[in-house]
Each structure stands twice: as C-alpha cells, then as structure tokens.
Image (cartoon, rainbow over all chains, first blue to last red):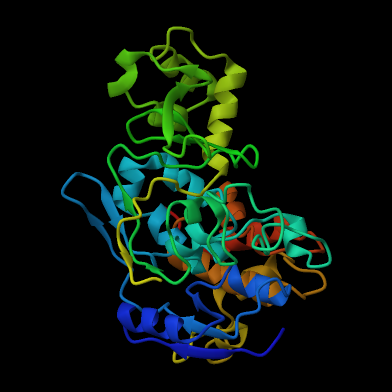
Length: 287
Length: 92
C-alpha cells in the first residue's frame, strides 16, 4: 500500500474545506470499501480525511412521514432501527443480506450508497476497466452518465452527487423507491427497478435522448392495477413463503404472478442493498 | 480512526486466570483444530452474545458468517456458542 496522510476534521464545514484544499484526498468513514481498494491499489488517495466522528449518526422522522438518516449511521444500526424495521422491512432485510455482521457494524450508510462496483475486473488493476478511470476509457457519447474519476458510482454522478460533498443525511420518503435491483442495462439507457414503501415495484428508465427519469409501476413484471396503489406489496413480498406472497400479490394485479416470478421478485428485493431514492437534497459544500 | 477507543482482544477475556465462558465452551466442544481463527471466532462470539440478537443456531451461523474457519469446525463452534449463551444467561 502506498503512503498517505491521515487527518481528522472538526465538523462538516471543516471536512469540505479540507477536501477542497487537498487534491487527491478522500473521505473515510467505515473504511470497509476504501481500505480494500487501497490494498488492491485501485484507490491511491494521497490523504484520508476521517469523517467517522462527525455527529451524523441519528435517524429522525421527517414531517412528511419519512426518515432522515445520518450518513454515518452504521448498516447494522439502520437495519435494526425500530422505525426502519416497522416502515421499511424490505430495506432492513436487504441491509442484513449484505456482507457480514462484522462489516455491517463498521460500514456507514453514506459509504454504502457510494461504494464502488464489486466487479472482479475493477479490483484487478492488471485488467482494463472503464469504471476505474472512466475519464480516459469508454466515455458514453454524450457524457450524461459519465462518471468522473471519483468515488461516486455512475448513477449518483448522474444525480449530481459530487465527490467533494459530504453526504450528510439521505432521506427515505414515504413513497420512496427503496432498492436498486438492476444495473444500467447498456451504455445508453439506465434501467433501474426498485421496491417502494407505497408498495410498487417500479422500473425507472433514463436515457440520453430522454434524460428525465420515467417510472413504470410494475409488479412481478406486469403493470400494476390502479387499485393496488394503496396496497403494500413490499410487505407482501417480505413475509412468509413464496406461495403466501403470491397469494397476497394476486389481489394487486389483473393476472396473478407465477410462483417463479414471485420468487425472483423476492430475491431481487433481498439481494441488492443500494438504495435509490434517498433524496439527495441535503448536500453540503462541493465544487 | 479508532485512536482512543477501548479494544478488547482475546488476551483480555479471562479474569484472574478464569477462562471466559466462551473460551471454556470452545474447549468443551472442541471448537477448533488448528487454532488460527479461534481468537477472532471467540471475540466475535462474545460480541454476538453482547448484542443479544441471535437466539437460534441459524441466527448464530448468520451473524458469525464473517469468520472463516478453514478446518470447518463450524458445528462445534455453534454448539460452543450455544453453551456459552446458556451459561451467561442470555438465552430465553
């Protein structure tokens, strides 16, 4: 591992000042992603700015009935938080499906959302990879989803999350799309699916030709019946067996989903931990 | 990052020469072979019991899954942790 400097910061404003003053510096919170990447020589920060002691570890309710989550809330604390268990059971389940308890105890919510791809090629610096340094390789034609050489993954770059920002507190809205279930399908169109608190499995589409994100409410691959909007398929998918979930979902669509589709939906929702719809409105600083 | 934090290692578990219940349970159940992973397994088990979330064998396996044992002493490790939980009164 290369040598690097290490510094703490006194508050969020100080963190932003420090990272702006030191080119090549990176924030470190839990370190469960960045340290690995430094060992593999994928990341070579000249300076680490430790934000792990900043007071960003609270989960609070928002007036609209959502949750505001401090960026430094550990994965474990978030998964076991009573309000998350009660209102976002699929999110709690997805967090606990990732990594191991030891890692979840260390990993921060903000870092979880910003962690880089797990692709083996990305981790092997002997192989070319357009995620490792997209500024020099395979940049998309119009650059909309092009990621700068930063810690921000492609989708967050497109959501204007800048690498020099401290991401203070993601929010869960009452009707949020809560999980990424599909990586960008190709270099031109981003297709993302997620499960919502409102009970919708939602497919979102974003393309260079049509940069506004379009949402298509789906359930088990089919358009959701209008009358299902008040129901809670997230809970249906979360609880019991595939058969039981299928029976509960059947009332929400014109054509009941097959057991296989039901199982796939449950798997998709459980496996992927990344949250899409933390509203990115609470950024501080940045270039 | 952890400067100033209090850290307990395997050496800090015994008190006045008396083994910690988890250490004793690992001996009772022969929960190791080569011993390479044992300090980590025991410290994780102590943490797991302190957190109090795991009650069943399946939950213990899940929360211990970050600790790899190349000798595959897993069944004995689970049995040892269950014994320690009983001894320490953390099982309902």
